[in-house]
Length: 169
Ligand code: APR
Image (tube, rainbow, N blue to C red; front, side, top):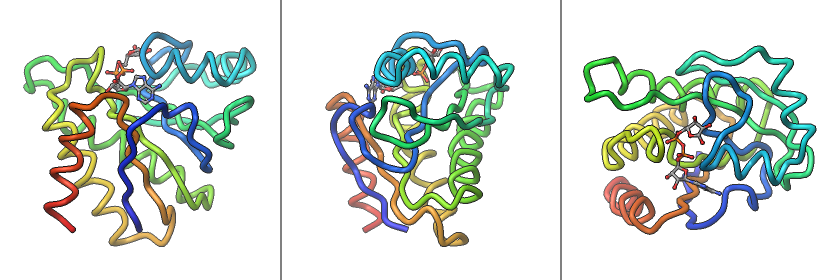
């Protein structure tokens, strides 16, 4: 598995699936969730309504509709409450379940935002560590997905991921 780092807008990435940092209702929101729904168009919300929500730490899949990405994997990250509510395991589970869905669907490429690192206030450095560790460990045991992109919208996250990825290369 190859891990790539990009700075930019996840809604512009042409790959098998982009991962949405959603909330448990799956009915849209702000941040990357809002950007994905705007770019995908109203059919995405219609498809999400049929999924009956998603528990924190789990992931569900829909088509990508007007997005360049063929599918959207909606995962729900934990809200950071000081680290005493199993937040780290729940964030790890978001990456793990998203990768499992990509593998089950035989996807070659998948792109992640920095799940929970925005509105949900998960400490960015810890979130980046969990993301990279979970993806790397999954790649040791699975052929697919072959390409995992981390798409950072802001410079702070980009610099964090760059430092961490350079350490393991
Ligand atoms: N492309 C890539 N990354 C983006 C984009 C974008 N277009 N827009 C925002 N981001 C980044 C943010 O900079 C942040 O680093 O996505 C990361 C996750 O931030 P949020 O979108 O706020 O997601 P999260 O912290 O997981 O909070 C989820 O926010 O939008 C609501 O409905 C959503 O309730 C849910 C909550």
